[in-house]
Length: 154
Image (cartoon, rainbow, N blue to C red; front, side):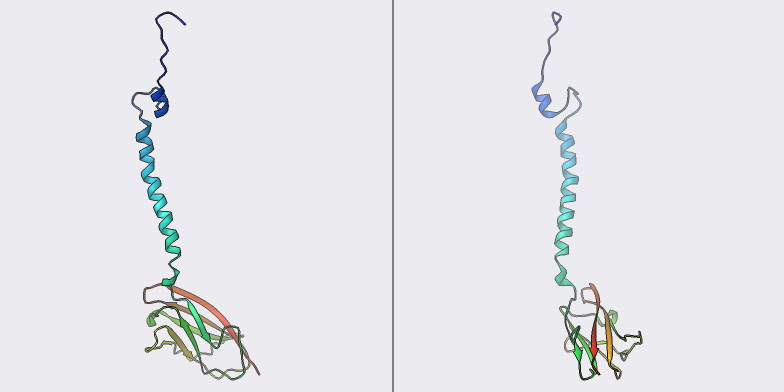
């Protein structure tokens, strides 16, 4: 090494990661990335917590006739009970035969005395398989929908 030239090792600069650049402060850059990372983490957490809030949706609790059942006497109506109160204006039920013909009375209604009960009258049903399709909106505006079948025995 030539005389008068000293090599100086800056251990603090290595810890900061500035590689000898006097204008670079690694701590500031890392801090800038902490905020977006924190926001992203909170967003993921909120999404996961929101997904567990399914109790706010009107989920199908039970039906009459029971889903998948075979009935020997013809039902006069289909009744569906949900876990939440329903918004009558935006909820609907359709009952169709195995050939696709609609067999409900078109008078689907939420029971006034039991706002979690949704019902529709039925025409005279021949023996066969019937599909109940429903779409409901709970009073807190969450949408649920589904279908099930029941069988009318000869």
